[in-house]
Image 1 (cartoon, rainbow, N blue to C red):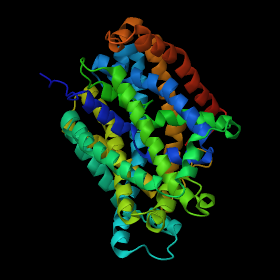
Image 2 (cartoon, rainbow, N blue to C red):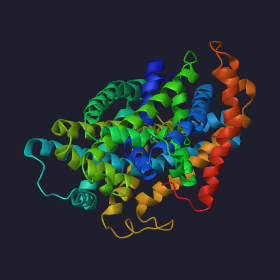
Image 3 (cartoon, protein in one colour):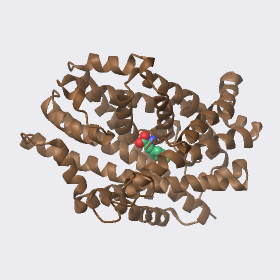
Image 4 (cartoon, helix red, strand yellow):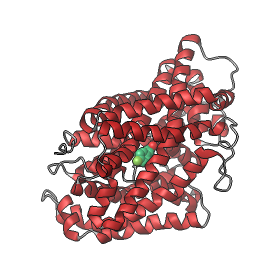
Length: 461
Ligand code: PFF
């Protein structure tokens, strides 16, 4: 007899675990940067619209596909829409594999900056040190990169090893409240800074003349990444929901929390940047630059109580990244567990180990190692790191997401989807009619637009 499937212990457990997956480097690393690049206000508004009309319906679709079959991505899609749809699930598993291979490297940097900032807290920030040089030194150090990413991989494997309720849910229950607490502290401190008014204006005052079409597509693409959609992560998490829990309420809570955290993180970072004279002209031209080059120095030179908040900030980044990496490993491991009948402990170590081989490639992408740093599959994308990021963000997630909208909106029967969403507590048109319209029409058209843009040469990585 096979063991009964492990489930989330309650709706709160599901919401925390799925929110943990959603809140990650996308919120702290990518969103503030693309908001900056796209001139704030109007971009943020468009992003919010994308989250509601595309992200939320796909979140509900993924969770319901998972819950209906109680299987991970491949098995769930086969059962939902037909045997061929297993390929879409497999595509998602591959996306999880590749994404985790380089996500771990950035996550590892947060450990480095945590350790450094603890050192600065006690020893003082080295006068005259160029923050950019520090960053280049650490990414160029092969031994250090391998040690950091290995530590992060081991932590990820250790959580998934213990399973859904005893591993993933338990960690989410402990870490997410800590993460919210740290963010709140940082927010209070940031709002007290002189640049906070300008930051709020930049983020929330919409000026549509500054928004270009490419910004709209970028908002759309990011709404996918940030909600962990398009690769079966939420199908997998959905497969551990019991029949008593409400998918509509859980989806609403996950999406709202993820969006709130992205906005709060952006307010914090921009308040710091606008408070330092001349800093807004200097923000380094990449997401990495903002999080790992501009901010560390600012904590020690401009932020009140920065000596305490600096290390805490990097704890926050590490915790957010860990609750995302565990969901990525869970997508891959649960496929091996369900489809190949390999016990969880063995599957987790095997999958985590196989992914780490590619993490080595990603970790060495910046070190000048021949081949790994120069490998170029896509124009201008050198190194496994950039190549993988390019492939996942531009092709894998949008194609996966598009297919999931088709599976839920067009290939599953109305009866099957309605049974998962409607429980009689709200008007049917609200629970079901609106969702069905968005998943059949709005979401596929919007995601289709991203795919067309990528074919025409746009780059969302
Ligand atoms: N949502 C995560 C972030 O914003 O960083 C990234 C991610 C995690 C995407 C897990 C997909 C996934 F399955």
